[in-house]
Image (cartoon, rainbow, N blue to C red; front, side, top):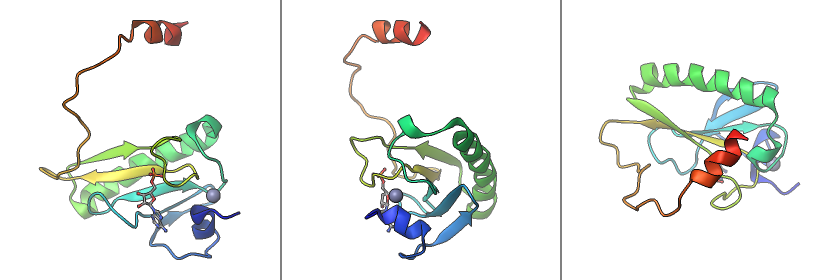
Length: 129
Ligand code: AMP
Ligand code: ZN
């Protein structure tokens, strides 16, 4: 399959490895938003959160918590932003999670100055159904 992340997982393309086990591989983002940004990539090829199974998700959560502690200690970061794109905005169509170590006064933006445009009441009702 012509997938850059599958190729990294299969070692056909090099990466800066952070961690690897039987379920996932973590490597540095080639174009980091902040020092130490890395990507958690499940070894199974699938595209979006819709295909993510609970077992893999639980494993990822465990690793995220461990890495956060290590990042704080080793990188001296002040926080960590975890994000994940699905379909629109997703450059690589192999599911992955961005771990972005955050530093006081870094320029990474997670907020916008736009007003909320839609009334979410109906959507919230559906979630509670
Ligand atoms: P997304 O837009 O959420 O799909 O993010 C894709 C991410 O993969 C971007 O942050 C890229 O910088 C990163 N990326 C693309 N190719 C590579 C690569 N060969 N090695 C490491 N990171 C990569
Ligand atoms: Zn893939």
